[in-house]
Image (cartoon, rainbow, N blue to C red):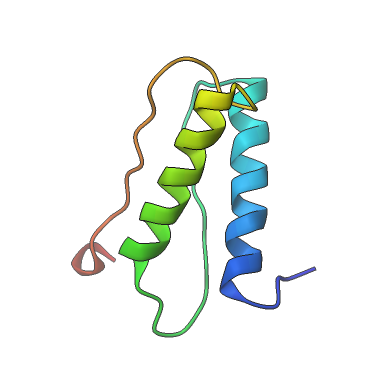
Length: 76
């Protein structure tokens, strides 16, 4: 089922990423959000902060530092 709004989509993405990082922290993952007029930077910063909190709490993330990468709008 699709999320009703951006915050719900962020929560689902965070849950999925935390589970993926807890199972096998190797690899790359992508998140696709299709919201018209979406500004990526605020979303990416919130997601990064939440992942760092999970990492310090030891929930679903390993001890390795992570990087959040995303293309700029001109790369699409």
